[in-house]
Amino acid sequence: MAPSFNDDNTLFNFVVKDGNGVKGLVDSGLTEVPSRYIQPPYQRINKQQTATASPENMAIDLSELDGPNHDQVVKAIAHAAETLGFFQVVNHGVPLKLLDSLKVSAQQFFSQPPEKKAVYLKAVSPSPIVKYGTSFVPEVEKALEWKDYINMVYTNDSDALEFWPNECKEVALEYIKTSKEMVKRLLQELIGNLEVNLDDSRLESLMGLRMVNMNFYPTCPNPELTVGVGRHSDMGTLTVLLQDGIGGLYVKKGENSSSGNEEWIEIPPIDGALVINIGDILQIVSNGRYKSAEHRVRTTSSASRVSVPIFNVPLPVAKIGPLPELVARDGVARYRELLFQEYMNNFFGNAHEGKKSLDFAAIN
Image (cartoon, rainbow, N blue to C red; front, side, top):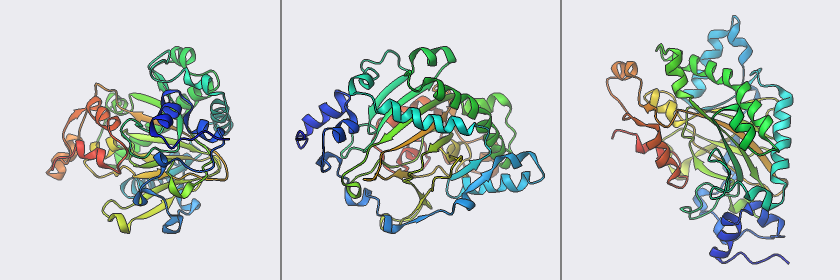
């Protein structure tokens, strides 16, 4: 018989403090979602009110950046960055076998007994560059997210191999290294499309820190009441995301629609593709020209799901703000200049709430 998790303190200690995570809840024999995970109606994902993006219209062939279709490809990338904030790429330079290995490794890590994962809880982790957790910021969230994760910050190869979990460290490290050139090329093309010239050091400053997450969304007995991840935008410059074949990623279309009149588009899994999404920093740097994507993830009762994002972000000490060339051209700065550490502290200090994190940098 499954233990009762209707008491908030009991649930919080079991899931968060003791490191059992959502998977521990499911493995205990849970038959219905505890009240702490039930989202208010406006946060739930109603599949009847969503559309599915056409896969053939979403996938951009990056190999064509080096051919006669270069300008058309850049135009497609820029259009996606200016509108939805999401697109998918194929022929991206990351080995397809590696993508398969990443999904297998993620499943292997989360299938371990709770005590094996709990050694990476923030309070006891052997290093600040690796952290196991659940939800987003459970200490401040009114309703928890149906997700466990392992977060690995890249500093150098030797630290990664010493401190990251054995089950996934080698594939995660290769994923970060083999995607770097793609990220740099995408950023070069997006900044070039703004008719601004950035030298390598300024480009590198926008992607000075890389973090890879392995996210695990266990099967859910009441998926219609929960979310895997609540509505939010990513804080960084560009996010590279590997989906598995189950799907469940939704992106909001347009920035100004009211809560009762929103249109959400599902980003369908495409075998061998990577999802790219624009983060808040690129919206700030572009002075609002590019749009960070508000997105969320649903849960499912049929199978557990994994995803593996790489967050490419500035170094904490980097100053971020609109490019001066764009401010001069636009005649207005829409965001203030600040240290990325300040932005990051604000982002992780609050529960997910759409694109509200951008208000911290906005000039009203």
